[in-house]
Image (cartoon, rainbow, N blue to C red; front, side, top):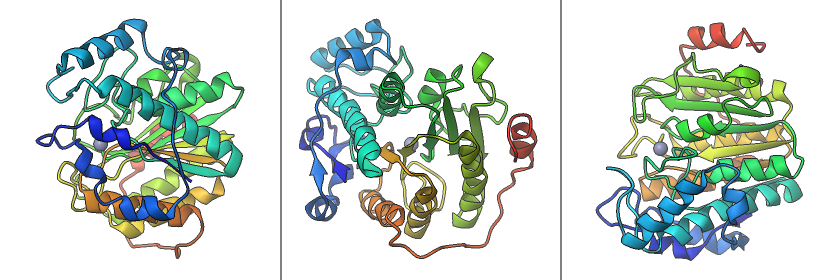
Length: 316
Ligand SMILES: [Zn+2]
């Protein structure tokens, strides 16, 4: 099941990589899938993650069509579009609880947005808003797996002190925004519940899937009632922003390996090649449905430092 809303097109800027053209190859997928339309996220839902000042600032920047920072534009439609994207993540989480899995094909993305700051093309943190709603509804031990090529600094910040939410990120390092070091493991009661696996530019399918195996073994130890995936496709070999080299088969394998979890909601983050994005989402869906072959390419990631830090908290 896919969550999608066509009004995402109203938040666009053709000269910017995060523009409506990212979705231009999705027509085929949307035509054959069951598609659900989201409601905009409500203020109460947004304010579980963001400050009231942040929400007001997004509204006023949108009205004035001003940029939030050097990377992050707003149009007069952005405020509503961002609320719909957050609502899309919420709906996908509810659908996953009911049907096993769902995919929110929404933009603008969210994982860089912190409680008080828009950055990195992100206005509202869609997946964090969905996660906070699920916690408020009594879902326990949620895991967020962030597979975007960039570190999900905003999501990490929101749940940094929470032992209820395990945040696991695989990302390229060095790369924007520069966070996501192995030693960033959480704070207070949340210590150990943030897991960062930085990977070098040039990472290929085999190394990536090796790192994913370690990540998923930690997620299993958390016994999540719900898995949320910040699904980025800017890890693709032909993505113009990321430096990783993942193929479409890798996205199918990521989906296939997530089948061990009974409830999985995907929320789109980055992915700036429209063809890699469409092929990647389709492959992920085939994988989670068990329609892809097992794929075990050669390659081992350098994970000694990650394991050394993880062993303080988990079997790794
Ligand atoms: Zn990204």
